[in-house]
Image 1 (cartoon, rainbow, N blue to C red):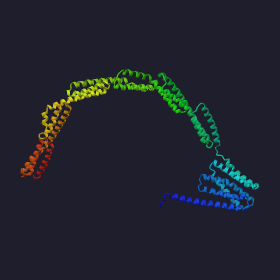
Image 2: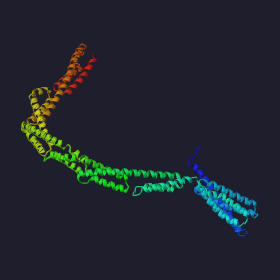
Image 3: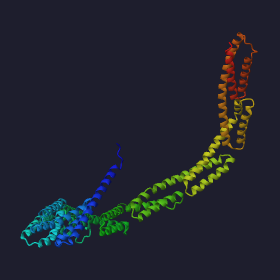
Image 4: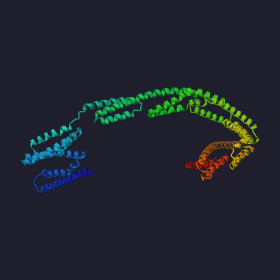
Length: 571
């Protein structure tokens, strides 16, 4: 059997509905009984107590009946309080009825109900001292309602019974204790001692707000929970000791910082960032921000120690750097001057260590700049020599670049000058090498032409060679050298492929000679179509090879091999 997911909720809801209906029916019954009793008492000669007392009890029970359905903490409190208030009047009514000679069974039943109510109130209001005291106070109220009932009967026995029940059931709960009286005494003694101690510490000090807050919380919670109160007192004392210890350390840090700061200001001649940080720390300390004050004091001390340790060395290094730079101008010098300005700014910010790090390498950098300028001048001289020894066709562009290099050197940009001058030198050298290579190769023009194939393909190769000669005549030696290198490389590749094709052709020709003798001996004559085709294809392959048509030669060789294979099957 499969249970639906909401089956338990549905069962609980149905059960609750039945209980609510039953409670409503009982509530209506109690109201009806109270109304019937009220109407019947109109014509009765009984007193007001017996006429209207049961009506009040029935109506009160009807009002409390819904609390039994939702029997939560609030409902339990209302029901138990009503029980405490209701049972003493019931006992009083039963006692008065007994003394007046009334129905004994009715009095006994009323007494039994009172005992049930008493037991219910004791079970519910018995968890702690507060609930027991509330039970005692509610029961006292109930006995207050029982007194007018007993006043109608002057029998001392009734007074004794009601008084004894009051002393037994109401007084002990009111006077009940939780067993923490000794702990409370210790707590209040510790609280007074801690308050006096913190009050003495607080003289002229505004930093103890947290301990005071802990003591206030201890006073509020310690009456109910002395152990918790003692714990809060201990926390307050520890917090106060920690704050006082921290303030003592902070005062020592402040004195040490001020001493170092005084020496640093004696070196710089004026207060600066370290003094401002120190003043900020004093303000934070006055406001109670001890951690922030400590941070500011340490920051001020660090700056002051930095000034004390590096100020003189940084000033000396800046002077040396200014002397090394002198009146030099140029691109690189401008960069070094900007570094020097950053060092001066660091000195204004009281950071001599940074300034020293910036300017300490400037003298050596100036030495490197001089070496670089000398190297640039040497590169320009080499480029001028190369231009003078170059051809007229190359001089115009080279002289323009050489002039740019000289201008870069004059502006102090030695790196650009070196790059331009070396570029001119490299280009002229490459041009000279290309000229020598092309001229040397053209002197061997016949050897190059011998490597070219014959036939129609030869014209394309000759055109490429003539293009090289044309470029050389116009002075474009680099382009001529590149074209010549490409031509020679292609010829070498062609020669290699032609040699491989020649070897294959010679192999097939030798094989064909042997096959032809076998064909003659087998009666396959020269006029056979296959023999004629094989002879023709081999001849075409040889012609293509001589003309340099390698691809065509290889194609004919493949066809010849196929023809020869067909002839081998005839032998």
